[in-house]
Amino acid sequence: MKKVLIGMLALVMCLGMVSCKKESAPNMADIVAKAKTEGANWSVDEWKDAYKQMMEAAKPMMLELHEVMTSMDTNDNASDAENAAKFAEAMAKIQEVQTKYGGLEKLMDEFESLAKGTENGKKVSQDEEWLKSLAKEIGLPEEL
Image 1: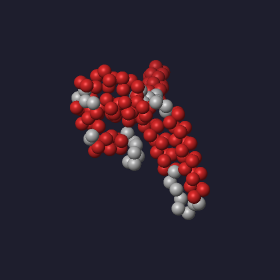
Image 2: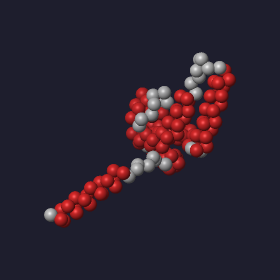
Image 3: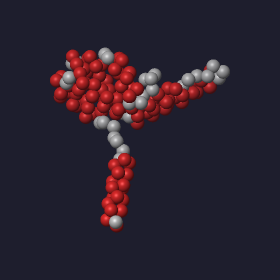
Image 4: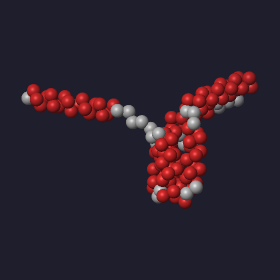
């Protein structure tokens, strides 16, 4: 009986460690490098997978920028000075986010350029319905 309890405890601890393991987002630079070397031969599904990885990698930055942008909404009842101050604060926050995620926008642009340079990548980049469904699937707000 003692061995069974110890075995069950070990199993529970292993399950706990596995469930607490944090999934890391894909590395955007690695995805772009792979697209450079292999992208010309990718199928539409492979490009879709790469787009999904890129969006997952960019998600934290996109969510932070979305939060800043929604905080920029001006108040019609506020004075011009108050709205200007709110706008200036938001612009400073945008600058912070861009510094924090330095280089990601450049990688995103490079990836988009690589995709549009291939027949299958172009199909995926122009499939707006699929891109919208992907954004929804990974939890990005509709406005993005």
